[in-house]
Length: 179
Image 1 (cartoon, rainbow, N blue to C red):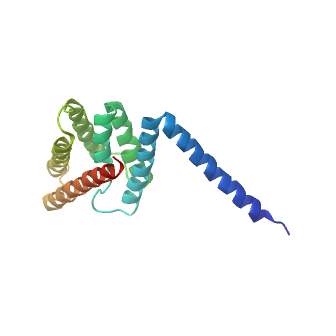
Image 2: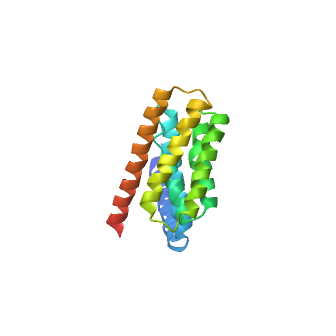
Image 3: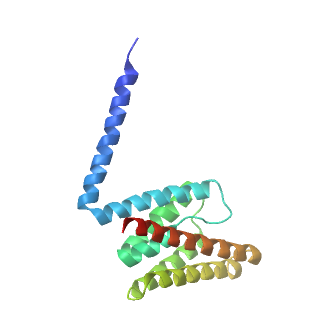
């Protein structure tokens, strides 16, 4: 008889301690990069789950955080965030990279590009305007370019705007707790 479980639990605990120690040290010295990486991983898991259970609406916070990264970091960060937390998890969950994905990516990237030039304005109204712009052109393209059902797209538009507003106000609430 072997006493294997005791050593396995200790090594598992030490792995977690090492991971959190590395995470804490990197957060101290590379705060912006660590925050970017942490949010990208969390949002990509959420996006994967969203597409894996095949929800009829996209409830992922990819648009909100891509706007945040394009405003606070750079357009480069936003570009990689959209790819690593939006497109790749969607493909891994069984989605396909087709013309519609490319269309939505171009709209989202264009909205983030515009967001960079609106940095001098107050963030909250700009975010709300960007939400409306992104979802309006996404729904418009779905109806006219991809022959989607207009009623479904209108409901999708409403749900996505409400979802993004929820993410915006939840993020502001969390910031208020820490500031």
